[in-house]
Length: 380
Image 1 (cartoon, rainbow, N blue to C red):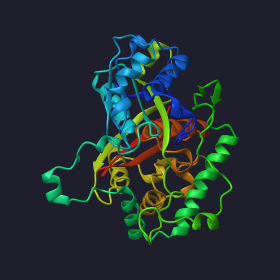
Image 2: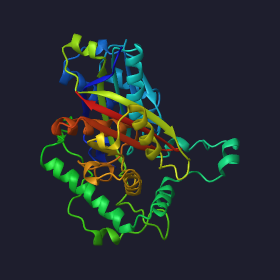
Image 3: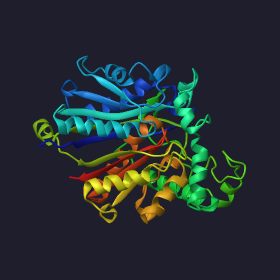
Image 4: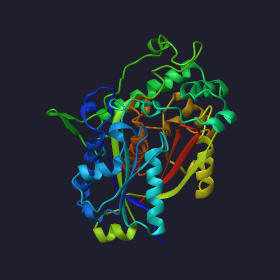
């Protein structure tokens, strides 16, 4: 029976909006991590059966199947195909799921999964400029108002009685964890530095350590006049890319490569389109039920910090120690390059699992439209 193992995981530094990576075309940013997969493993790119790539705003520079243009931009053989996935913020996590399914079913022996988003060059919402994606029948069911993630985050804070102070404290902790991880060199093994105009970008640009609750309390709410969600306790607009080389164990042995982890269980769920962001809760229940594992079996969690309220509500539901959640910081500090975030989280989680000898890790993400992916990795 085939399995799906990860033999390499790499990412770019995450660039802040209009920061160092903003001058790089997203296909070239994608090609950079494909280059690194080859450099780090020595694999012949001609043996790759497919490249499955997440990208949310598939318009302009990110259209025309960016997975395929990334493959060709990397100089890989023209025989290597690529396909682009949009499951909103979970696009590259879904890319991993599709890659794993292809390996287990026998359609692939070797596949690369990952994703990219250049939010500086293709601003969020760019794909919605030519008409609404919501047709008559959707609007008859849910109303004319377009789903707003910020309002959804406020609704979650209301439902789970999460205070502004709790949100801000969580945001500060994300920055402090990311700063500590950077200073300790924990990200060095996963980051592939990018040279921009002769300058080597080696670290994530959004990290801001040393903040205070008092300073964050001075910020105005971003979505509701009496709200609790601000720019400080929400994810950052970012640029970045990440990739994972995946194989069957047999293919890895044949290539002389050592598997790092296997995809133990994968699940995806739908949830209400508003508040939209609660999907990680049922997704976690589903992936645990499918896996036969209990929450206490999991040694580390990556729950995407789209908003602090999403993670705090999830942790409350599962009574999880926050010390095990995003231990190296999350999207509030590191940034959230939409289509690349799922692969970035998985890359970070996998490297953390290896460093700390953690057998099981669980990743989950809320997604636009009311969906969520959940993945359990098992260290090998």
